[in-house]
Structure formats: structure tokens, C-alpha cells
Image 1 (cartoon, one colour):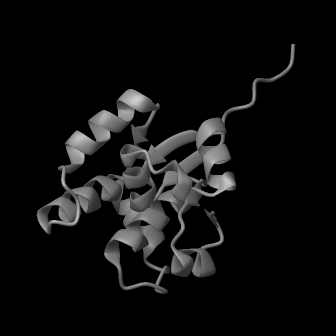
Image 2 (cartoon, helix red, strand yellow; image 1 turned 30 degrees about the vertical axis):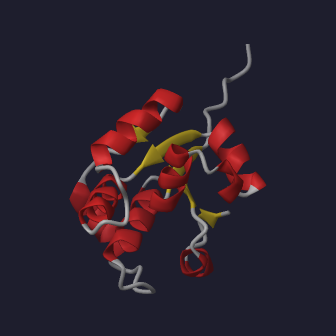
Image 3 (cartoon, one colour; image 1 turned 45 degrees about the horizontal axis):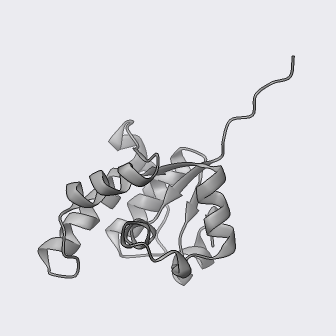
Length: 132
């Protein structure tokens, strides 16, 4: 009997979560759509915090928990657990950004050996695990 292959772990960046929630699938690349369909989609707790921050400053109409609850009705989506200090340690050398959200979201993907699905050009230029 053959081994069952685990789906690829795919971290979603904040804008990807928003686009999925809003049904803006046309914003996603063909690679992104394929990875979402075939992978095991997860988010860093920092994505939850960034969603809340965007709500608080008026750039998003719904709070983080409402967005995530609605999105979970459409697709399987997990929030990563794990040791926060280990994620912070993984973020220490990622000095190519001053954006703490990007830094910790990338570090979470790095810590878990996952790809990070993002359209963010700066992240993709500096973070080898970033895919679009």
C-alpha cells in the first residue's frame, strides 16, 4: 500500500484572505488558485491581527473574526499555533522589511517550512518561500 501524500502547507498573506472573503478570485494568479485548491491553507495569527488593524483604521469593513468565520464557511482554513517566541526568532534575520506584519507572517511560514502566498513584490523579492 502506497504512502498518502500530505497536502502542501500554504500560508495566506492578509490581502489574499481579504480577496478570498470578498470573492475577488480574479485578483489571484493561476498558481495562487491552484495552491489554494490543492494545499492545506493556514494563516499566521498576525494575519488575524492585521485584519483587525485594517478594520480599526477603516480600510476593511468587517472585524477579523467576522471575516475569518465567513471565510471558513467557504473553505478549510486554520490559524497556526505554536510557540510565538520561535516565530519571533525566525523573524530576527528578516531585516528586509520594517513592516512588522510582513516580517512575522513571513517568519511563521519560514518556521513551518511552508510557502507564503502573496502578491507583495517586496516580500517575493526577499523571501524565497513566497509564491504568486
